[in-house]
Length: 451
Image (cartoon, rainbow, N blue to C red; front, side):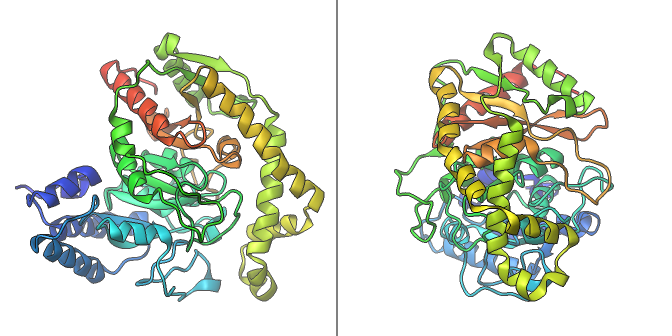
């Protein structure tokens, strides 16, 4: 067969082709590596990539399949891993010179789950400094003069550019949803605790999530199905029945989905072309969407987010602060200083506010709506590489641990991608994916410009 564009094959299709003997894992990995050689000099999505090691894994996967052994759902499929997630066979440097050369002795939980499913760990993708906001070297694959977002910049860019069909990132405020929007891919932040975080650099126990990147909703659902698991080493992980997320996402909803459009008080700051695109989308959905008001002050939410994230970040980085603060970026030093100054009463008050807020949002889904529709960011990727963009549109959903998905449905006036954020109720990740699949299919059958 023609292998010219094999690097654009998605995870579901790639795994099927390998399983059926149409292609080998080596051929798929070679195609992805050829893409890396062609485009990564400009995009710079990788923090570590050893082509020979990737190919050695692929050869082993092919030999295993040929032996007649049962294979996993991701057998032979390459995956990029954000460089804050531990890998026992390659460095994990957390985007900082303070951790240069750090090579863990064990895989993170999610990496172990990927290997068990047969995936090839292609390499480590660029992260911002300790998954905060100081940019790394990665450029936006649609226009290298623009940011790819952060902090999971390398993962989003690598998937968008065809260098790998799947990648893992993380989100503490908007580090999966925003780069997915800027780079024009699907980016999913599951319910807090659904995917175990053991072996991932902890910035904030309360706010940290594993993030998933792919070029299709089906690939996101497949990846989630392999990663949703209980791990007692993650204190927020709980035993749960295994959910076939790919099957749930593919189902026809029992009722046509209803969406709640939430502008929030941040709407006036949204770029004019983005506001116009969202208004066109809402008009197009007609009776399937209703505008709602936020049940809490967004300023209060952002203050709670800053108090919790700042205080927990200061604790997580206390060793680096004590022994190497001169090697931290000025922006990170400032955030740690803020976190160290957070009063206990403010931190505990912010933590105590989460359950009531989450419960009030859950009522929206129980009463009427399948998903909340809202911007993923204030517009397309900003020009320049000094900032990774503003995550404010993601803060509420991260604070409450609700599943959120950036869907590449629109473009800005400059031709860059513009994601739509869909949010679901906690622990209803499958229903959210199903509602989004309906939305994507509806727009494909009834296209609208949204530019």
